[in-house]
Image 1 (tube, rainbow, N blue to C red):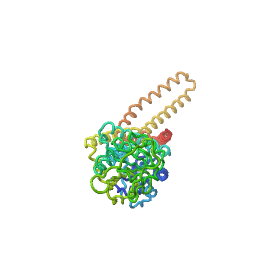
Image 2: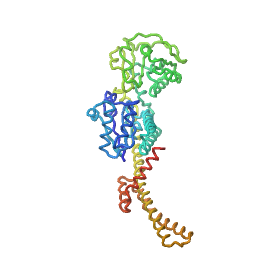
Image 3: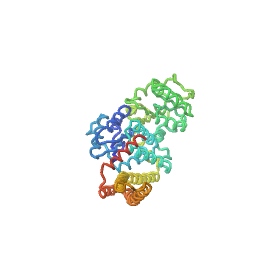
Length: 459
């Protein structure tokens, strides 16, 4: 069985297509089980974020696995396969491992080095465990990927510049608005990305932060966690809040537009109910120069929260995931030295992981060889006991122990050596040679693998 990755990301597809292909909620669960239940797949996990949709699968056949996963992605996303396939990428075996580790390290992110991807992989890992679609192979791979990602962030400076979608977006906002301290900010949504946005705004000196969310209690908890004066509002007050905000960051899980051009042209009205205890008075921001008051909207959602038509509203600027300025600023925020360090870490970790996996792959054959040797010894001892029925019990035990030690010593050197040789590329040939030389029943190593997978899926 081998690891396969089939997916699309901001590097291979336009954001408009990513929006259509994104899966979440019940759709994600249905896709997860559909992939796992198809004929060529034994394990699967799905990473679905604002920048990528990737299916990780353990397959018995490459072409069969690619075809099945691609068709299911098309079916569950509603994007025709002919259109979707032009943007899909495929990684297999060693390349698949390298890709997963690179993704976890932030090398494949729109904002290189951003740390949100680790949480997204962890979420996919947990969902696969909860839904019993992950077995030993993906369990080990994703756990290792999370460790590689943590190592990349701890040992390099890839995230020292605060290169996340939020911080880079705020740098773009500052170019439009001017200095951010004292500005009125509105965060739409109260999930993990919104919480990061609110915390970043608070640290950056925002004069007031308003949190709008469909679940008011969640918005209130987020507002209460901030040092800056902050208040929560229900979504039905969003239009009023938009009128007063200088800076808007939106990241919800909605499937339709949350912010439209009409909402931005509504008149400003004093805040209504729903203020948290940390609310405070805040004077309207002065216009930046002549003309209409400048406002900036950062859309971090996928599908997009903000109607592109808001760009037609005087004084309003919009940046989203498909805005090249965000990615360009992000690329400059991370030094090339840090990126090269992370690439070396990924390379070393891939080599170590593959060596360990190859060594583990030969283990069932070694177990089968030792099992056959034990059967031979037991058969010969039984034959001896039949020919010498009067042999002393103590002498029989000593003789049996001696024969077993001889067999163990004869097998020790070749089994240790085959494990060492198997750790190198092409090492599976040594397991094949053992099976051929000793006439091992192929079903015995397979039985060991099946037992390991059952045990792994229960841990």
